[in-house]
Amino acid sequence: MTTHAAPLDAAESRRLGGWLRARASAARGRLVGAMAGAALSGLLLGPQAWLLAEVVDGVLTHHQPLGAQAPRLWALLGVFAARAALGTVAEGLAQEAALAVRAGLRGQMLAKLTRLGPHAMAAYPSGRLSTLLTEGLTRLDPFYAAYLPQAVMAAFVPLALLTMVFPADWVTGLIMLLSAPLLPLFMIVVGKGAEALNKRSWQRLGLLSAHLFDVIAGLATLRRLDASALQARIVADVSEDYRRGVMAVLRVAFLSALVLEFFATLSIAMVAVYVGFRLYYGGMAFLPGFFVLLLAPEFYRPLRAMGAQHHARMEALAAAEDITALLATPEPARSTGLRLSGPVREVRLEAVSFSYQPAQPVLNNLSLTLRPGERVGLLGKTGSGKSTLIKLLLGLESPTGGRVTINGQDLRAIDLASWVSRVAWLPQTPTLCAGSLAEILRLSHPAAPDSALLAALRQAGADDILARLPHGLHTRLGEHGAGLSGGQIRRLALARALLKPAALYVFDEPEASLDRTLIGHINALSAELARTHAVLMVAHRPEAVAGFDRVLHLSGGQIC
Image 1 (cartoon, one colour):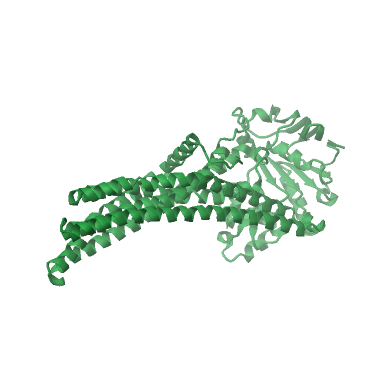
Image 2 (cartoon, rainbow, N blue to C red):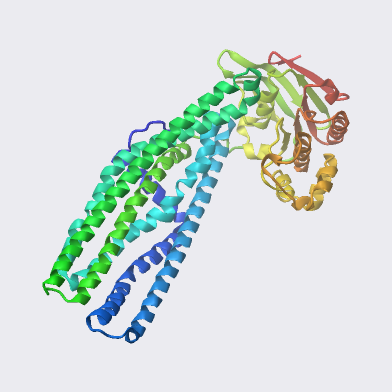
């Protein structure tokens, strides 16, 4: 991700602006409808001003009774209603378009992160990724919901109103035409300074988010080391730095808005003074003069609004720079070769070595064979390489030496998706996304019927959890299984793994957060699975793998 805070050059700004507009194709129909509604609403300003000018002219100049203006008043009320309806519809369509673009982009980014894999994702701080997927995408909303429709309004409405002003009084039209460029010109000049401030503020938010994520992840360690107070002060300093950055952006935004209002007010005042003198000296009739005066504020209003929305564009460009950098990240080479067919007869690690850093091997010349019909237990201390071995089996990492084979074929030559579909994995810290219990379980097997879900819950010993849920399988659970204990979360994750029609079952320390009774239940369950599948149980405690066909010990990167 980019970290510089200099303003974007013209070419980069055009590239990012073009990229943002290209994303609008996902909601083109809604955006076109929003722009058309906004433009039509602006076009009705002419009839509205003329009808109002005729009513005032008839009552004040020609001394007609107000009742005589009833047709015009009813027509004026109809124009008001039409403009209100068009504005409401246009705003709703614009918001829907922004949501559609955001949802599409979030899907692209999540798919990109999935293709990058855990190893490449480790280069991105979790806090920055989280901010980019949430706050970053939210910052694009005003660009689609407000800036693009307002850009059409700023281009269309002033020109449309000029075609109505010039026939009424060409000098007033000329004043408007010559003064109008001052507003976007100033908007561009001020925008250059605000752009750098806005980028710096966005980067500070990313740093703050990354730091907060790191602090939360290591909170237990910090408390043990009595360093939580120090980190609290650091977070406070970073937050204060971010606050100052935001206030600097707002200061420039308010200043630019003030100057835009000043120039717009000055231009309207010039029109008013000119028309006033013309009316005073009898050089202009009241009706066209008042009509022009009514249109003058409406002429500058889209340009002023465009200036206000210019900051939405700058925020979108700052976020888009990081989003495009993420989407352009080179992906690791993925095999598109062999697809597994038929049963998995053997999974083997042949003289496998692996290291995250040179000269610091995690696994060293390790060999292991897994076959259907047997249970293999793997014991080892924390940091002995058990999790790394699982990543190699799952294809999430590639060995730096040796190879992993499936039925004699190198895993690197096999289509990864076809292998992952054959493996059921219960991780050390299972993740439950927000959703109904059925949706959470079906993540491993989307086509599974309710009967299969119930059977998997029974196998995992999670019947009591299901019985306590008010709506059964359709009960919605919070993010990370909010409201459930660690043991209950692990049992639901176990049910999700059992639901998958797999050839290899990998259980990573399933005894954690469970009592002895449930440890015995999992032990018996693994024996049942091992009749027709390969089972690998990674554990800390020997009782978790009691009675297994083979119990291996991992130490120093080797099996002993």
